[in-house]
Length: 313
Image (cartoon, rainbow, N blue to C red):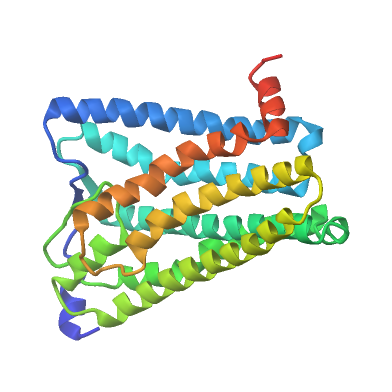
């Protein structure tokens, strides 16, 4: 960074998150819709965590990973949705410089952790279906716990360097972000308006793309082997149960990765900014909302456990 860039660095003390510009009445309507979605997301994912915790039949690696994944989704929506809801009712729509970068760090760290969790959930299904005889000796409770810790720790370390680099960027004047959260692309675009930052854009793009494609290709490869093994299961009932579990995982994978790839494979490119806002909305708000339904509707054990948690018969 040049001395000129250092001199104008951080002259912006806050950012304006435009969110969804529209009339006040529409803002209140959107607030109501997203507030209900937020509450249902918290309730759905909390129900899965409680069901796995209280039902001893679900104390298996697959459901342990699912419970941690649901807890992750609770953290994920809390990293951006409360501020988005407050923004609907705010007149200034401002967020401090430090608050913006803090939101960026937690949002991306939790997103990284989600990619890793989806990968180890695919690994768990691969072991269970392709190597059932070795599964109990490999996927022990201790090893499963180690995988969970790895996801959380590595998830919060992976994006640390890009965030540190962004804190050093010059934000010299433009402070309006056409989004509902402090996202990577818009922040890089604002900094680029001050001085050229090709190095930072390259590092952020490379780390985002590497994480996304490495985990996605691993998941697709794992499930390709799993589905091939499922088709060779002689029992129709066994084949149906295995396929049901895998199809739930795959539905979440494609919902999440489909929208993420459209947004972060080329951060800072400035392409289709309006569309980026909606793809971000999809994987950051709607995917965590759909996950509990996807994982429970086609899983008898989970439905039975949820009935107990919710006080059903």
